[in-house]
Image 1 (cartoon, rainbow, N blue to C red):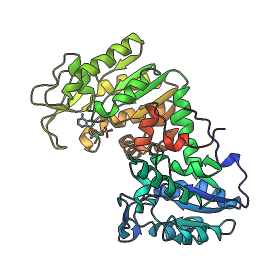
Image 2: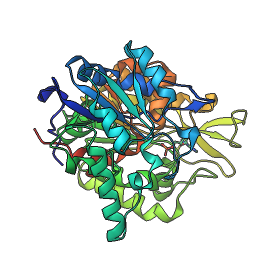
Image 3: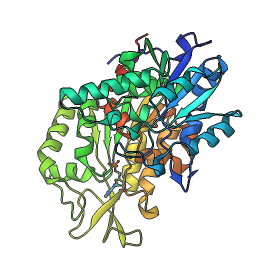
Image 4: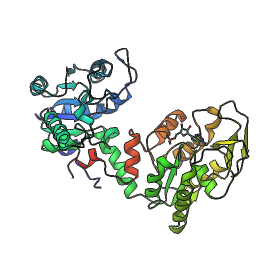
Length: 404
Ligand code: AMP
């Protein structure tokens, strides 16, 4: 996958008509935006394009309306929020396609901004087109979207792993397709830095299930010097090594795969670290009785966090890293009594001085909870997309952008 993609920096914007895919998939309650983080995140690109004298049409999805017009999924509430943040009026179109929307887009003056209604109000946006007829419908929809501008910008990394109308197919019908600043940063770190890492390269993979992270483990083992495995998934590995794991999470059917991964690590001379001690609980509850145990979890107990020695061992490896990628918590960090392992690793990453890339999802929540977010090099905005990029998959939304 080529990570050298053109961005808004590389093109002339003055007087042009830009259509940009953003991620305004924000929580809305009673017609009000409850959290404007994603709108704020898109501001630098929006401001840049508008300040350069281009008109700007914004496309996004919100929720899962399943191809029907459902008022609770309307993007209209985002208009006021963006308008306040950017300090000028923002227009709105009731649909993302059609003659009226195209006319409104064409009448925009340089610097003016318009948000279009939810792209997922049309089933053609995200339908799995299996028949030729459906493929043609999806393509026609993408062609309609393309009428909204002569330059396409994608700044919605979180949906870049989807081959939707507004995220990928539109690119077939516009002459220029480039990345926005958010997308550019995601490519730089999750793409380029991981493909060409500064060594030592340490990957920390955690979370509940081995099955969710299998592809990423297999991909990273080809590149890293140290692979740290924590969280619920570590116990399938410990069991595969012959340990007793009590009632801890275990994917029985993946014991063989876990062993294969450990064998491959050994063959590639990748240091694979599993928690040498653990916090075991008598039930899945913050108020459970707990005890610190080694790699054998007593009968009737479940390991819900890594122990202090494991934190120290993991931290030692992390302190030597030049590049760190982290995806997935080390324990049930949502419960304060089982958050120490995740927090400890978070501190180690923050203090390592390494280029640190936090790969979306729960690890982002954990980093934010720790108050150490500022000390990380890059915190990804896309859970599924970041995992797929780390797995080495081609993201349709990224692939469709013009190469540098
Ligand atoms: P994932 O979405 O796969 O990254 O998994 C995150 C979830 O894994 C979080 O909700 C954690 O509470 C959970 N988790 C982490 N460690 C454990 C564990 N030892 N036992 C059960 N669940 C865990």
